[in-house]
Image 1 (cartoon, one colour):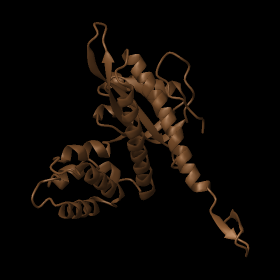
Image 2 (image 1 turned 45 degrees about the horizontal axis):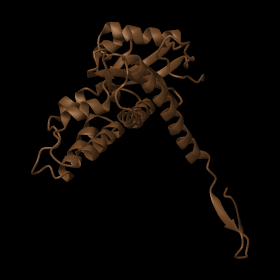
Image 3 (image 1 turned 45 degrees about the vertical axis):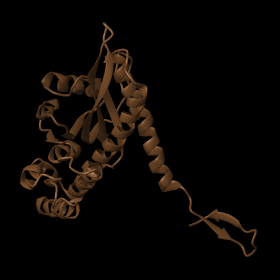
Length: 262
């Protein structure tokens, strides 16, 4: 696997891996100062790729809303020039994403679907959203997902206020391609979606701290650099949990010493 630094401008980009099982696309709204000094919001699109072994990496950041064939063709041209040979499944809000390459499957992101399905009627709605996404991601199929949603609705206090859309078939129908995947492949999609949420959270905080950008190019560059840092932080955190040795006290004296546990 080759490591990448996300490419957003005319500088030579680092190469990406040649194949990703899934690509997960997100968007970041940024305030940009125009030539006349007024501020307006522009969108920076970005993506995470999940590999067949469960590893993942940031694919890049691009200016403009990821809507329409021209935008997707530009994104794929960038990925193709950096060594990406194939993406099997794309999680994006735009059905035109399938124009990226022939035969690609398109799955809407979990946050987009369930954010639309919620009515923010209680203060803990953001926590409940996360629980719903987690329950549906882990469910083995439509029936299991519907039962999980109904249980969450029952314990959410929704008897007095509507929190979730009661039209479960409509909500879950959008995930039919997801449940058609084999269990280990569903796990890869879940992993990519979860990393997208973690990266997005760190990115939103960084953009809020930064404030308005001089132009769209500087906003895209900042998003790419922030994603690269967050990617390294999350991977280091994940790795440290795996390799950090467990320490145990040995020896009979009160001034014993510690050694790595087996």
